[in-house]
Amino acid sequence: MFAGLAVALGGGHFTIAALAAMPYGARLLHLAMPELLRRFQAGRVASFATWLERGGYLLAALCGIVRPPGLTVTGFLVGFGIGVVGQQLYDGSMASLHSEATTPDTYGSYTAIKSRWASAAGMTLGILASIALDATERFGVPAHVARSMAIAGGVGIHLLITLPLARLRTRARDIAFAFPTTSLALSLPTPTTPNGALTPQRSWIVLPRTPEQWRLVRFALAWGFAIGFSTRQGEAMAIAHLGVSVGTIMFLSAVAVGGGIVGAKSWGELGDRFGGKGLMSIAFAGLSLDPVWWLAALFVHPGFLFVGYLLYGICNSGWNITVSMTMVRTAGAGAERIRAFVVYSVAFGLAAGLAPLVSGALLDIVDARWGTTAAYATLFSIALALRLSAYRWLRQVPAPQAERGAYVSAVVLRAVRWRVRRKAA
Image 1 (cartoon, rainbow, N blue to C red):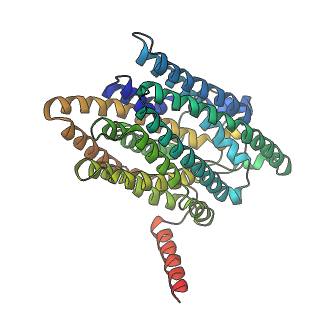
Image 2: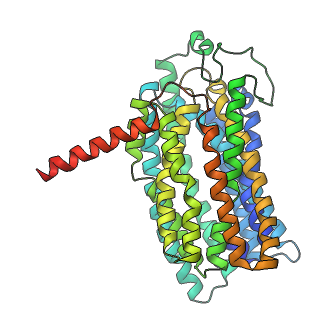
Image 3: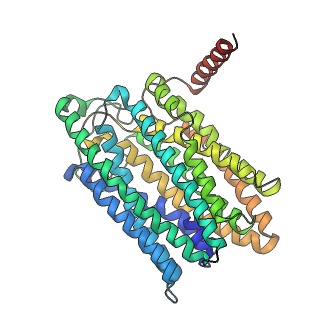
């Protein structure tokens, strides 16, 4: 929706690139998250972040409606920037709060249930919003007004998140009372600190301190740059070059969110049984092939967008679940639970925030010389190569003991064959 509004406001390749870069650049705030959680409860930080995020997005929507002379795109980007700051504060604090609201042996299933219900709600609201937006624009409402109102409406709906957030904070307090954190949990070795906990450093900046953490950083940089290289540009291509309506893009985004329902339960249950590292490689394979579907939509038929969004939603849901299981601890203080996650998130954000600026410059240069089709073909081909090349770094990511992805795949396929034969009999 923000990409569609940027197009309606007259933004070019670099405006789209800025939209893609800001959420990742704002991940720098995660550097301060351990110290922030040491001083304040995760639930309080999440509540503040919720209001900051919605306020920023509302400001972006108002700039889209009012269109202040000379400041329209700037005001829109400022509002969006405030929103993504709140979003990253929310994501960082919730990574800890979710682990506090469950127990270690059910963390995967809990995360899967959360993802499944979030996907169902997102898909339903996204489809309804896409229908309403297309209908509004067909009735003659200016595109920038219709898209801004859709964002404002989404802000209102998302304020309902304050209700379950309060219940989640209560559940975390109850579990903390029933299972008090022991000093032993703070000193146990972890994949990124194999020699035990490091000497605490009360600092607002968390930096890698072990060779294992640096291996995690190397993967995050490679994967972040690969992901960020084509982020948002696919949507812009579909709207500006293929003639796909913004309502259709919203529908496809809803399909991607809804795709998280497919297999979410299995991702969580398999993670609890086999660990997260092997499942990460399976989800990685699906996400790496995402540029293939953009290329197919560009050269074959736009219908491949549906396939791409659906598969992306399924694999992205699995990726988020398995990353949480691999990098978020389920014991210790909140600040220590997310330390490895913070290291990964910030490095990923730095690379993913820089990549859209590079890809935006690439699009401008190739578009001016050889045309839009050649520009997008070049972009997505490079994006595919970058994603596949990140696999070597994924294999070096330190993680809790887990079965290999090939073994997990074999177990799943064997179970599927057994069920098919049982039903056929």
